[in-house]
Amino acid sequence: MNTIHYEIKGSGPAMVLLHGFMESLEIWYPFLPSLCKDFSVVMIDLPGHGKSLNPEKDHSLEFIADKIKEILDKEGIKKCTMIGHSMGGYVALAFAKAYSQSLNGIALFHSHPDEDTENARKNRERTINIVKNDKAGFIREFIPSLYAEKNKQRLKPQIDRQKEIAKQMDAEGIVAALQGMKERKASVDFIQSTQLPVLFIVGKQDSRIQLKRMQELIMMPAHAEALILDGVGHMGFHEAEFACVTTLHTFAQKCFGV
Image 1 (cartoon, rainbow, N blue to C red):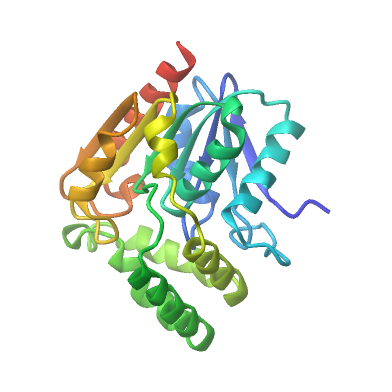
Image 2: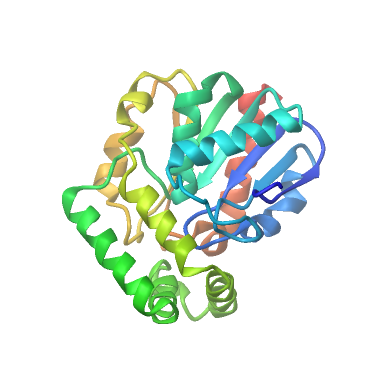
């Protein structure tokens, strides 16, 4: 039985899009009119998210990366540009470390290569306990906190839809994702040594990522590009849709040399 749900739209070189924590591949739908003109867009529901089943035992990012490789092999995709939002960026980095020959570029979309600090790990544990006891309450508070304050009213329909997507997840799937993120290893050494082009998309008002640290990370790869967005939090695909899709489209074209 296929436990991982995915969709492919468009035609041309492959772009693989990985959503973030408590999201689904649906977040990428607004990008399709632009991206499908030039690319085969592979959108994947990460384990426990969307229509993909929960991981039975292994919730590690490496496990997820292996599942993505299985999809690419099944579809005959030898090379792709991979874009990961938030947790999806962590998965993209795990994939890049294991299967760099399958990539021609990687985009960290409100994501980064650092591992959790000790304090962040403790916060993940607290969050796991909250989810086990009050999943609905956690979702209600968590989703709006990802947006810049000035965007919350304007994007209320999108926020409400994201809450609905998250509510459809089992608590076990949310906990597995939190556990995988808590246990992930740093990828800073990879970022420093890779010859792959790396795109960073950063929101200045992102409450989950320190802007100063992102500026340091942007300087590390041999080939780095960055889109730094003012008035944007952690959800640029809604908060600055046009700027983000245009940047991703251009980046992938350069990665494929078109």
